[in-house]
Length: 370
Ligand SMILES: *Cc1c(COP(=O)(O)O)cnc(C)c1O
Ligand code: SF4
Image (cartoon, rainbow, N blue to C red; front, side, top):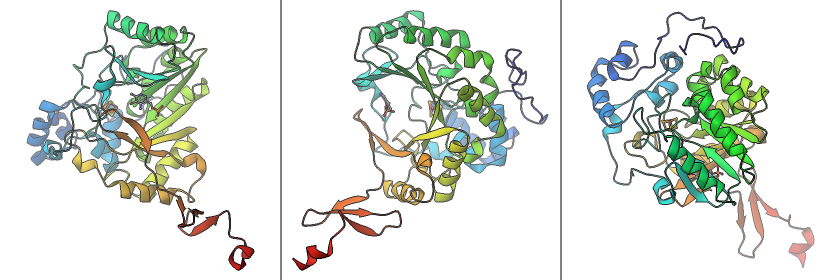
């Protein structure tokens, strides 16, 4: 389907009003230069980057990037990606340590990742799987997909299946429906979760056919990867509304990124924007130690400060859990600010959102006189 043609299956798909936007996804430095997203001087380095890591910027995000440096920084390649720090890893979150069959990552007892496809609509410059994803990245063929589903069928402890990748929503609605139906047909699978960037990268793709393919008798959650309020355009919000209105609850995961969302105001706008669009912020990831992503990383203390700032200023609905995926495949853990401490006598001390300390339980006056 051409991006600009509203699907006949979805009469509510937004008409494109702009006639200046590009028609096709940009996949190289020259195209980005012509679009005005890459300076002449930066083209050579971007071509060098392209030899290692895939580039793709959808028409929707080319338009977005032209008006927002926070969007441009996420998708336009830069010479900084050629700088590899010593601590950076090819498999930063240790997927390979927990891959019993191709396409499955089984790190936690009750849930698995199922990665049916390794391509994405856009390639994030900070991607944690950047060595694995790309347009040529191999998708599971029919036999491999069946073997992955058999693994899930034969492990009764698996309660949740998380479709990840790559971007699973790049699969055709027909193939997605096949996977959702197969998973929903497994008795012990109670929840299906889909991690995707597509609603923000190419919102028109979330059409009636796609929505119908994802609906199931089992719970299907859609987790949007979104890092800045500028990504939440009217078209993106409408795409998410189509999913939510169809009964698919939405969550969001974001990555804390230097130069994109590393200040309190940007984070607040993002979280408010998501919640107002009926999307519950789930995780805020500390950036992973992927090769050539040092320019996006910042100290954990800075992340904690941003989170501390959010608490008290915005509603509990707007609070994501700040997490670190421990290198080596040891799992994700919360690394947000600590509010709770203990005194030498073993009394709890708890900080309020302004940073003032309080005893818990409160000190009674007769405590001090006895
Ligand atoms: C992130 C991840 C999950 C999901 O973890 P939640 O904390 O449930 O969101 C599951 N398996 C693997 C391998 C993961 O990396
Ligand atoms: S959408 Fe996800 S998997 Fe794809 S490039 Fe971005 S971070 Fe990586």
